[in-house]
Image (cartoon, rainbow, N blue to C red; front, side, top):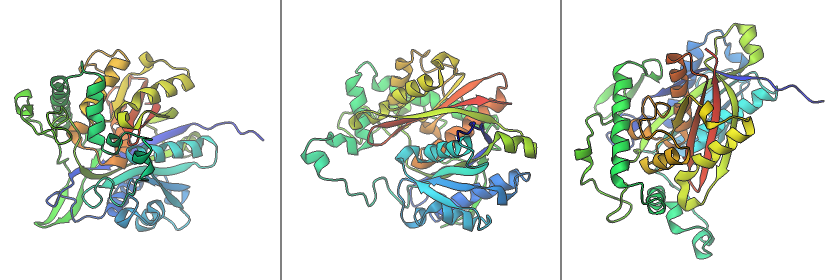
Length: 395
């Protein structure tokens, strides 16, 4: 018997601060699963109307599923967070889109009427698990020329986009990056993340500290400071530490519920899922993934790009954002719809957690701009993919 689809709502979303993935980063001695537990407990504590026993599933993305990110993180984090033993959980991996995929899976559960309450998000401790750790790519990829060797190095894929679009210069990428830092500084100074970033007490080599501010932002960045930065992916290249996201540690997640649960519990949702899509591109041009993913979800939902009031685009590299701007004929880097609170070049990109960050930041934009109607969260994914989800403001 066919079932009528349910609406799926985000009730709350939050994240840890994002630390630098290095020995002196404030999460260096903190476990990834403990960061997930902090997010889960915060979502439950901030929404007392939702009895933890009502949670139907706990879904978490992680790119490297071993060590403190292994052992079916969704289930172990539910137990560690003190959720009832009746709450199941599982893990997903879509690399950078792991958290977004977890959240989209939650949307599908709810839409199909198979769940009413789901916690979902993503985590990545890149200090414990460097990108590609433990991976063993099949030698056929290179031997049989299935993919270009550069496809296995994300920075090189960004250089490839510069090659493909020579009009997208290093200077333009640097300008984009500086503007990102400026937007992030303003948002932080205005207190817009006070209820998005959740403080976490952590043990460090210098004793106990409270991790409540992202370590990555460089608010003093200028075009002059971008000159002379190393180009680690290619001699004489254009991708630098200044116009790319960092290597980071962090977790981000959301509490999603059905329309029925909104009415039953008298909840006040932040936004409603409209639709989502994934798309593939040439692996060596990984950063272009958000373009076809955005086109696909717009087509599937019967919407147009101009219907979107806000675009939360993960900034793995500035050049991919420049390509996105051109593809959709946006009003340059200062387009008011694009990453108004700053992006990953400022905040960092702990791989699978970034989808949750995008959702939390879009929800904040909707809070600040109640007249806004629709927004999209979108990001590129390793080995040539893109993910995109459209949300409706219901404030």
